[in-house]
Length: 370
Image 1 (cartoon, helix red, strand yellow):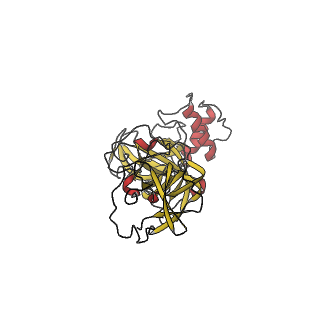
Image 2 (cartoon, rainbow, N blue to C red; image 1 turned 180 degrees about the vertical axis):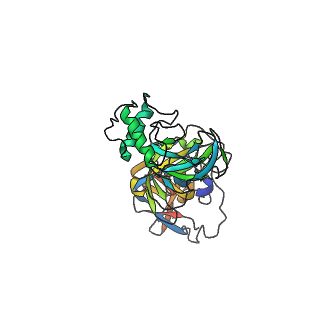
Image 3 (tube, rainbow, N blue to C red; image 1 turned 90 degrees about the vertical axis):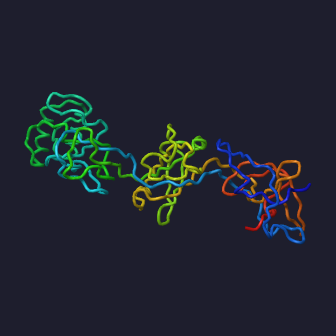
C-alpha cells in the first residue's frame, strides 16, 4: 500500500461537516507539500504522535461578546423636557428613578405587564396586581391582599403613602408616566437622550438590560442545528479565567451579517461577513454571574457538541491520502514505517476518530513538522 506524496494539511484539506452529525468531507488527494523536513533519508517521518483512546468532542470554538441579558429600550410615555437620567452603567432597583420629565420621576417597579394605563380605584387586572405586590414589598401596602388584581380602598391608601414618601401630591392614583414595570433590577446600558432633550411618546430615553451577565455570538446558519437550547458551554473571559454557561436561545431569523446590536459579536465559526447567521445567547452560570469585564468585551465560547466515548483517535495532520482513494496513517514501529488504511469518524479538538488497520492505543503515527 502506497500513500500519496505528502501529509494532508489539516487547515487546507479537511472541512468539518456542518450537519452536526460528526462526519467529514475531505478534499481530494494532495500533492507534495514541498516543506523541508517532511521526510528523512531513512524513510521515517520527521515526527510522531501517539494513537490515543478516550472521549472525543466535536465542539466548535466561536468568538462572542460579554454583555447583559434582556436588553430593551425604555421609551418616554408623555411629552416634556428630560430633566434627569440615571447614569450609564448604574443599576436601578425597585422604586428607583430611571429618568425624570419636567422634574417628575419615572420609577421602576417589578412586573411582567407593562404600564399601559393610569391606575385608580376600581381598576382590575394584572398590572394592578403587580402594583399591589410592589407596594407590599416597599412597606406601603399594609393589609393589602396582593393575590388579586383589584384596586381597592387599601390600594389607594398604599399609593398615597408611597406618594407621600416621595414628596408627591397624594392623589391615590398612579399616572401612566409615573411607573415603568420590568422583570427586575435594570442596568443602564446607554442614555438614548440627553438632559434638556424633548421627550415624546414612543421616543427612546434609555437602553436597559438585566443585571445578569450573558454572552452573544453569531453562528453560520449551516451550523446552527448543532447548537441546542440548554447545551452547556465553556467561556474564556476577558483577562483570563473560564466560566460555565448554558445556551439560552438560538435565533430563528437569519441575518446577513453579525446580529444587530451585537457590536461585532464574532465570526460564529465561519468566515465572510456576507454569510447568513443566527444569534445565539448564552446565560452564564450563577457562579459566574458577576464575571468581570466591560460590556461588549470579546470572549471565546467553546461548544461541546457531540461526544464519542472511548474511541481511538489520531492527529488530523497525520492523515495520508492513499493511492486509489481512502485515507491512512503511517505507523512507526521497531525503526520502520508502514502505511495503514483507516476509516474516519468524528473530527474534533484537532484529532479524528479512526477505526481499522489494527491500530492500538499507544502506537506512534507519523506527522509532518510544523
